[in-house]
Length: 481
Image (cartoon, rainbow, N blue to C red; front, side, top):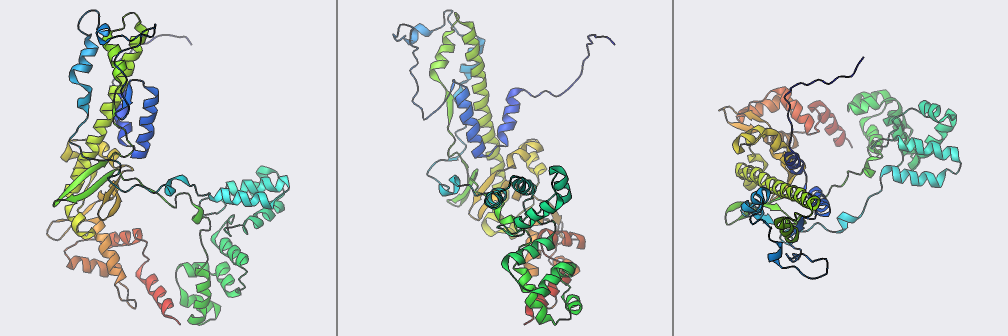
């Protein structure tokens, strides 16, 4: 073995810092962008907001006296090549005044109370109860370990045997602690399976229904398949009697921890506003909370003066100047790109905005990329986590991108439109004879929409609608008195 130096030539993609910054800013939401801008303002002295009062262009001398602008002129006459590149073009030109913005006061603000409070998580809530229940150190340790291994629905993701082995505690003690946790609020948390969680809720509510307990313990698969007649036969009950017990089970929660899920409520600040003015659809970018940036005049004059006696300071200021210009240009490019994509979406979906979901048109990332002369990945970054406020409501930009199916005469039909049509057909179906997937295919075919049965089944599953035989059994039980 020996050390040696080898020289080789390879080709690889190297992204310039300015390009990396532009890509990073493009996929940020307005709230995330505010944090990035504030951080950049703190780190770069050459950046300031337009709302700030500009400092005097003159630099104070060491004696405390003011120095006039004439004294800051570079000693050699014209500025160097770097200064010519920066100031000949004019950094204010990077702002596109043609992009319409919606500033503070023009749209309804998000209520302050929706921003300041934090809902306690499931783990916080259970840990608080554990601290009031377990006073022995080993029991509290077991309880905290169990609570820390619950999923969002409140189920334990690790076996009691493994907990006992990891903590080196008796299995009986682990089970005793777990039984107490299952009685916490919400009841059923800490269970291993669905039947255990439902039985724990019945114990917590002191429900003494032995038939319901037997259904949960032994016949839960029949309930999941809505096979009520077979379930009634096994329990030797009539359908009306069975319905009384099933109504009790329906009031139990199969996911007890879900109501404490942190993603339960989501407050969104729209990035784009779409309004109809004078018969035309207008697109406005939401710049509320986003300051408009410019270069600091004081440091700009210092660079123009040259500061040849302090090369280190000059180099520092020029590096910050480059970074400031990259950042301003990246922000402007982000706004241009988002506006172009939003403008194309609105032009393409005018019928949807005016007449509703039945008139939405299919659209793909590749289509928009080709029309706007951008890369498909760029469009993907634009639509990520961005929201558009329309007269019909608030929609994520991803909502407008979906596949198309062909009609009988070759026209394109949106998959969203087909899903909505399937949902309406099932809502209005005969409850005594629900529509099968084949019958839905026939109806859509008569409406000039060609679709396969498996596609109908897939869309029905995405709409969380059970098959026709399950729906029929549920309708029958609802009609039982």
